[in-house]
Image 1 (cartoon, rainbow, N blue to C red):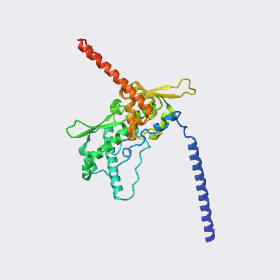
Image 2 (cartoon, helix red, strand yellow):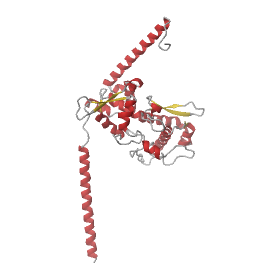
Image 3 (cartoon, rainbow, N blue to C red):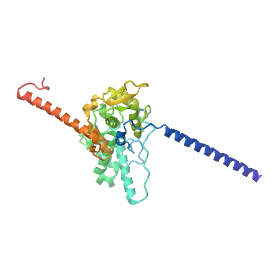
Image 4 (tube, helix red, strand yellow):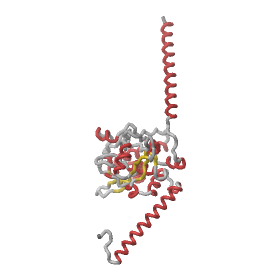
Length: 342
């Protein structure tokens, strides 16, 4: 009897082992197939390294919930079902791993968590159109960190700027408060659509950078290739940017920040993306290069070919402004009405 039970046990173990090996082989084959399906490198190899420099790190805090907020914290750590359906996606930033237990690493990790919490608070307040008050932020970081508040806020603002393309500025409220201001004049201060929501300015500036680094005209397939770094895929909702395909090819085209056109003679049809008139009016090559370089803590001059074009553009714009000012001054001296007086 014991021998029969042992034999049955051994049989089951052998069967489980065989199933495990089959699953492992299946997983390996699927991985190899996925690797083989990866898109080919850009048709602009000279831009490959530069395109990789586009900011591609999502903020760690805005997609995750703080473990414990100090008493008095007013940050919203959950979104309603309506808000989630508008912006939320399963691709949410992951929590950083806890470092080795040393005094220095614990301090760095603690400060990093404070920055995460503060970033989450600021962006959520912006999303919900609620005031961003210094007193609330001081409660969040704790009295032991009040002396470092300015430095912590500076680092937090830097991360928000790099990902969302928003500048943190002091507000006009009698109580010390802050406002997030979009780097582009997109509707609703970067939200694009009326109501609450996350800003889309960072995504727009990244796309403008991709176009710039593709000699002012980016194939649509190349754009999606590089947006994968942000886990942005066509037809798949993103936590911060919503449904990107509609946003890029319809909304931003309608707002004249992008131009989306079919490649002449392409069959099946392929599409390419260019700067729209609003992008030319509200930003410049230099500003986009600075945005890209800022994420790498480098200067735009590291991109010599594009930096040269950006400098040339700035000089041409300066000449146009100078000519316009000269014309206005000449009209004033002759007693003629200026354009603003007509």
